[in-house]
Amino acid sequence: MIRVSAGSAASMGLTSNKMDAYPTTAYFLSGSSCLMKCAFCPQGVSNNEALNRLGRVTWPEYSWQEVENHLAEGEKNGIKRICLQSVRHKDGISSLLKLVSRFKKISNLPISLSAWIKDSSEAAALVKAGVERLSISLDAVNPQVYQEIKGGSLQNRLDLLLECAARLPGKLSTHIICGLGESEFEALSIIDKLVKAGVTTALFAFVPLKGTPMEDRDPPPVDSYRRIQAGHYLMSCGRADFSSFRFIDGRLVSFGLSNRDIETYFSDGRAFQTSGCPHCNRPFYNERPGGIIYNYHRNLSESERKKALNELNQSLQEKL
Image (cartoon, rainbow, N blue to C red; front, side, top):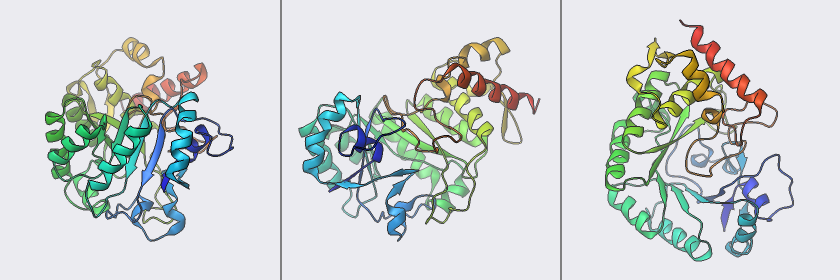
């Protein structure tokens, strides 16, 4: 058995559910009762209801036979990548290698894997087995917050990520969750290091989930998230450098760009779409339909582009 995101299951024809938006990546989740005890994540808690979720997404279980019979239909419906997310297992990467091998046998789609690994040798083994993108998630970017929420050392995890990126150029990704208690300076300064190391960063907004220790925390303010999105986009596209950014009390107040450049770079709305691996759109992973959209899973409409740009411009001007 393997868990499949509700949207992926619908795209693959495993259910007849109608979705507001369909994913362009097939998302799978392996394992339960994660050895990690991240305070924001339901996979490390003893709560059967919570275990059915990751982000705002539900993950029903299906047999491998069902997945094998329906993945091709998902490809016809726009699926262009497989994303395998795994809890931290007792047996290390041995089960992951088997899963990757199994997916390689049933599909030619590129495979992304997000999993806990202990060293760069394990990363190299997974890439050799067929993983096209490997994510070593940082999640929290403030050292104290990392220790409190995830346990362990942020610097050690960052060092491993950068070591793997140097050994496997173009193969490494990471996840950063905004709204865990970090400053915008802390988020963007680490993103700067990652961009320069060739690491792809997927931005998430913190989602308070029932059954987790952080269920009563608020998600991040959308204006703060927009500033981090915009800074991430500028650095990733090579249109601005972190050294040109200006901060006041940890809050981003300027990109060091002219108003004309800001209008040019952000007018198409791409900065506010889902970031991460190619074809990863994660529809409503952080959002409720009809609510605030942190990561747009599609091209923005003209009104949405104007709204996001106005939000960004206004929030920068408020501190000048």
